[in-house]
Amino acid sequence: MAGRIFVAAGTQDGRELAGYILQRGYQVTASVVSSYGESLLRSYQGLQVSCEALDAEGFMAYFRQHGVSVFVDASHPYAANVSENAMQACHGSGVAYIRYERQQTPLDYDKAYYVADYQRAAEKAAELGKRIFLTTGSRRLEVFARSPAMKGREMVCRILPEPEVVQLARELGFTPASIIAMQGPFSLELNKELYRKYGAQVVVTKNSGAAGGADTKFAAAMELGLPLVIIDRPAMRYDNIAYTFEAVVDFIALQ
Image (cartoon, rainbow, N blue to C red; front, side, top):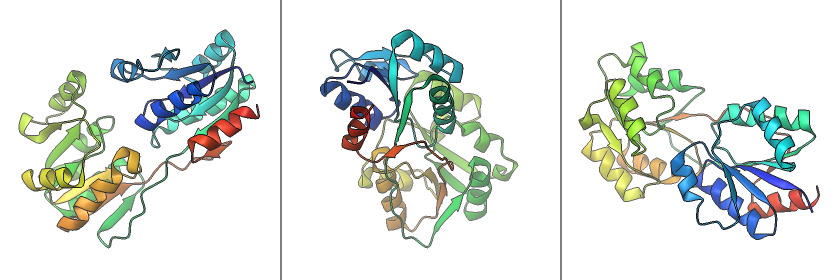
């Protein structure tokens, strides 16, 4: 059997995957970068949790200290830096690497506009409407707040209900009336109601798959006829990739 399995588990499906591997008899470390993420893993008996934000060297040191043999990359589809650091560390440590990739949500919509990054998303959204509903999280909120394209535009951001995240939004100039602090994913009807309530004219989002709520975000915008500005996933070449929990465990069993 493989040694310790290290799972980058900062998403809901990443946490579930860590539990799935644990239940199949493996020693598992789940890596998260927030106390909230750690609290969600407490129900898994025997699971080791790491809350350190690790770069490539940090990963390598952890691998050596804990006898890690397989790295399962279930980080967010847009967390390219985590994947890059993980693959670099695995190459330098002789640790097997596999990416668990959640499927993208298919979309056939003539008001969908795909862009390569957050700055282009700000520019495109500003072209399409005055009141812009941001569902991209807090990590790149500053790009929208500082973008010259947003001058004269009104923005609403939907972010996690964590004090430091709300504080960040306030520091960037978002008012209490323009902050929706709620934990997703959201239903179709709730998305529609929020778009209506806040007068959304454009929705900015990412294709994070159904696990990230993209399906209901897309469907709600389509039903209301709202333009969607969708930030593409980073272009990555993974060493190994799997699309199901079963395929990940099959890979681990071969190591």
